[in-house]
Image 1 (cartoon, rainbow, N blue to C red):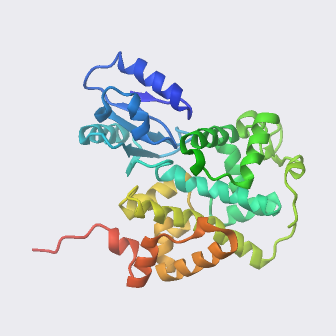
Image 2 (image 1 turned 90 degrees about the horizontal axis):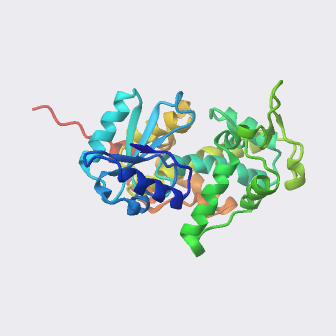
Image 3 (image 1 turned 180 degrees about the vertical axis):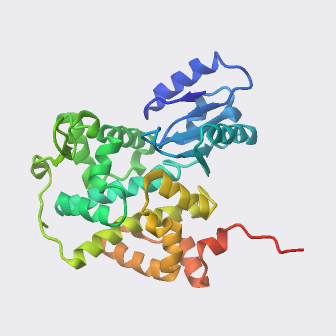
Length: 328
């Protein structure tokens, strides 16, 4: 049974309890959440061993990936049945361990967030989205944000702030999204109003009112700025994928790359974020991250795992890839 309530812990808990009261003992209960940790959601369950995360991607009829999330108490039987289910509906499963945002939402979130950081830096929205598409992403970060829904982002931020308390980091763009959703009713493509306007007849256009919320100071982009934006958008996602390896959220570079390309459209020409790092070279990647961190903040700081791998001359596929058994 799959629960697909929006990102509100209390409503999910109520639905879980009511549903489980009607279920057979053999049933598996899957929560379709994109960000809320499964271990915490499973606290509402009377049988946490049969509680698992099963994250579908929007639009479900077109997206081929399903992210299966193991909670602390999820059983291997629940995992096996979930994988069987995903394969039977002809989708591709990846398996990850519990974390806020898991693997895909956590890494994809950095793409739209970095787009918002660029907007907060005063860069014109058209430049941000044009360069975003030029990196190989299916859409720019602002239009992608519209697609996933601004009100969903706002709900996630509100719930995350409740969960983390003083540990929650307020970014400059948080207030922009809150105002667009709460005061201006701009939810994204779903209601025809977000960073873009979506007329019934005709193409979408950038919302003129955005300039009232954010001061645009950069209206022209030279080659250096384009490369800077491109690097920020791609490397911000890739370093988050590396952090997921360090924390044990994901352990297989193949699943990380496939999940990124199928799940949120990470630039396919790279082979995925892990192949991007290996292709650039871990040492060179770390060197660039240090430069980005000095210029833009700690979100680009390389995790200890990357520094260790750089020092040893390792690659992700070499360190974490499946080792083929030597022929007998």
